[in-house]
Length: 262
Image (cartoon, rainbow, N blue to C red):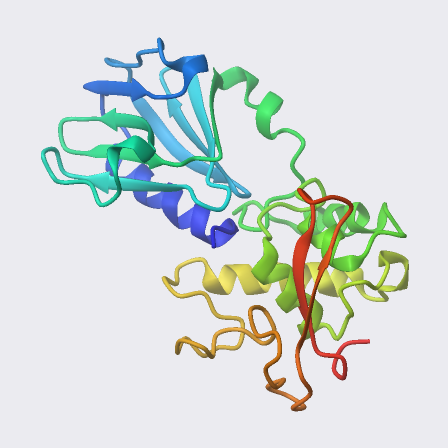
């Protein structure tokens, strides 16, 4: 599942392959930008911002979001793709690489100077190398700005802090002993919650297999996420599963231990 750590690694791989190269081909397969051709432009860098990707090419930024099904692949020219061509939304080619964005949930082009129009609403990025104590305070203030909001939805709201998806928000609630439905007004140590969120995602930033338990063995990587009906690894109680959110679009799968989380 693409979360901030996955997107960070994707951006790093794309940046290592494309940075400083000139595009020898550009095929954008979404109607709004199908006539745009960036061939001949230089790829300055590829960066992540929370769960968003930005290819900075010439004076244009290619903004993409993986959502649930999306992925960026890198191939050598002439190499067979691992996913069908009809799923490709954009193809960027250099002399040495072909970067293909498959089933991207968001794909749009904006002037680089106007990136704030598409990512400016995001809260502090948990994987930002410039993270400071002041940024931690800002993130905590964002989370507490909605005192009635359930903690799991506050953590998942990218306007509060950027990078957390369903896996992390469920696991954070477990690790802090918080029911997902607990309102933010009743969370006593928001600063500690932010610190743990950053520590957890940083620990997984360079891992191919995400883990919140410290165990990368398949089936042992999470405390509660994806484990509805199974025994809690701490107390043995049966892990509960539900959904939480205001609409079908916003509803999130929630997992919790009825004994360890209150």
